[in-house]
Length: 382
Image (tube, rainbow, N blue to C red; front, side, top):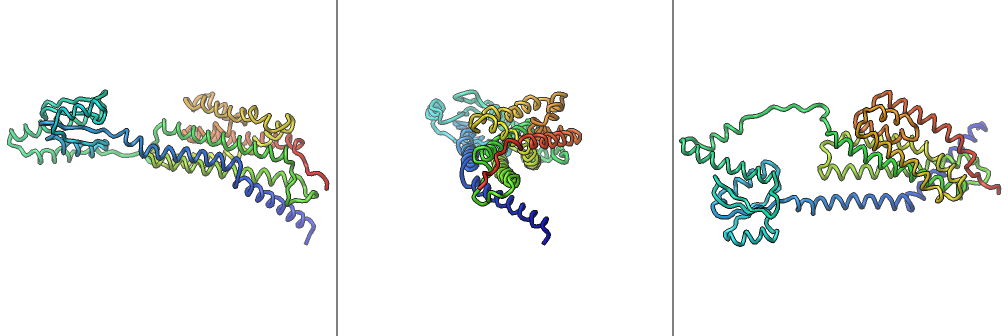
């Protein structure tokens, strides 16, 4: 077998060995496990809280007393039709009902006739509940007038209900601006976490531990070991971003925070692309900073601040993503991995912006990687 082929195979084996070791090390313990479990716990906790406490708090209990008990069934039906979470409780004792309002056990007490309903509430009456009560009272009065006129209220209501407004939905469905902005912010936060965390891990591995690993001999080319470490840690970071992003997507979809999942899914996929570009851009910066400033811990905050600046740039650009300022910052390589995904999520990124920012980021990555080579420790000779 030609010597060149043997060298290539040996190099590929070394890289695969290092990548596998990094995956085993970081996926089982350390930063990946702690940060991922912590964020997932927060997300699951929010989901459970939303499903239990918040749902109960959103429910309104309406008590009916006297003649008002006649609207119990129409009120329940109206609440079901509008999606209002309303519990209707008839009372026989008006004094007991008022006492329940005072104690906070009853939100609203309704009394009086259908034509003249009176509501007693412990706090400001919710507009949706007020609208329901008003609508039911008007329907009751209308039914009485129809009977007086010799008309069948059921037939009249059937004819009224048959009236329709034809609505066409844009394809694809339009997503509210606030929803897009919220999704963009979540994607950028995940990128800040993933890029800063992964770059810090690989910097510590290359500058404190060196490039020596138990599976590689001292004669192995250090560049192969460096490549294996960088790729291995990057894969771990990508898995973390994907897991957290998918969990966030599942939580928001389950709680109804998203009107449609497709745009958020696209935003997550673009986020993964820009995670790769951002990690490739930032790991040489972290390595060089750690190698020239001593222990990695001494440069974590100032170096991470560079990444967090990307978050600040996004916050500055999000209110007006189509402005000249927003377009300009997307062409600054250290900020591009955060600004461009936010523009893609809000739907304001054009092909020129994406391609130009990508090329500038790749060019900056090549330069920074070349400069960082001198700061990577190589294995000691056996």
